[in-house]
Image (cartoon, rainbow over all chains, first blue to last red):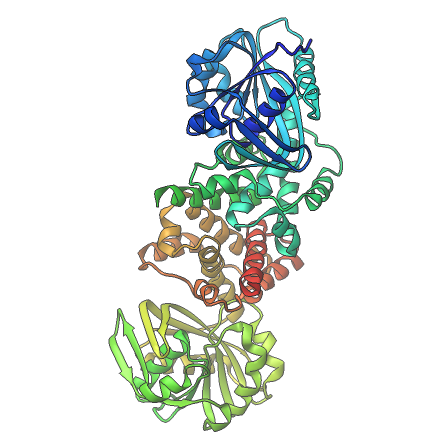
Length: 315
Length: 315
């Protein structure tokens, strides 16, 4: 049962964590935000969202600079980059109430497997896949351009629990906050499905310094997007995940209808943060290869991105 | 027989045309340079080469702004970009003595086939493949960093000629000028072979804004270079051209030993000139495809480059 007394912790309150956390806080949940560089600003001024769907939102929030200061949370939403999961694990353990549900709002493969050994046995781990166009504009200021759904799938936790019930409970929490959300049977399948979007657009936004609109308008890059998407589908199949029929064409249509969007990897590159190449490229490539499947276009894109990422952070 | 009275026309006197033309002029050949934007400077000051192998060369040269002013030439060396071959053909016909030999010093596939119908039947057409690190520094000023060989293969001409004799005659001309040069039996095979270098380095220098040294130093881009080279070899094989055993590893070693080099496509991009994508990418991809062979890495690189090229010239 979802009740407004459910206590929610947001770990990593960038665009994704900030957006969903503020939506939940607005709906009356008891939400606690763990911040790093933005702590002072958010503690003083709160969080704002300029949303194309929900209008302008602004709220003072319960902000923390240290996980040790947070009260024990029933749900922990992880909005931090997958690249920081190793440092994150102890904070999650600190902030987790007994039997807490941790939801990784991250892209790519292998993120739950990476984090799981560092969590307590009583903690539940779920994957959350966000279909949303959202960016951080300034400390504590978020721009929400389009979409917003978040789907939850259970990954692991104590024996004897009903995974479906916990995923449905999480989805209910978001729906109570006005956010479209569905429980998913198979988080592994959902993660491959999400990659069909992330693999082309995240990487090409960095490689070609181009928004989704620019990538979709040019016939060369559009064909490259489509070919990369098809390779993800082939990789998923090789790993035993059958994606919905016509999913590539569906995503091309969805992206055509999106406003001009700069994926998160583009922003990471601009701000010289490490790119999420492990979860979005290296892990899918490794799993496909282990299944005897080569994905030459994705591999080429990955190789080019490793070059760009290394140079960007060495300069 | 090569004699110093051989009259040579250089059509398009950028880095390649200027270098070989000046080497031939220095050796005492009667060399005539057709120029466009650089005419006034070169007419006044001559041509200079700052060569890592030959030292500093500087000579006044016979410069022309119009092909109609040139005397009829026995050999015509075409150093202009393959992208301008359509405009070039009438100038070649104008400057050609009866039975003239035209040598296309260009990269890629299909350049002779494209030009041939626009030449006179008495004119011989050869392909010239240049293994040289050379750049234009300023109008009439050329920097020669390394290598220098030029190999010639006969393409087409009047019936009843000995193709091998004409290619050998051309090679003798260059050798008389102190330039390493060999006649080649099969210009088609040689063009595929040259692509093994051009496909990775030209495209990646634009895509990643990187010199050969940077591309070779990073493990990601180095693997990408190698994988692209292997795809060229596969494409060549599909088109019936068997390249020498171990050629990819040979070229990687050669490039490791080169000074830091920025391929010509990089300079074209910086100066917002059209990239030679047709000859270096589109034509090899089309021929391989016709032979039932897909080259996904090269195709992805080509698609990305068409995006970059269009944006670069639209801005």
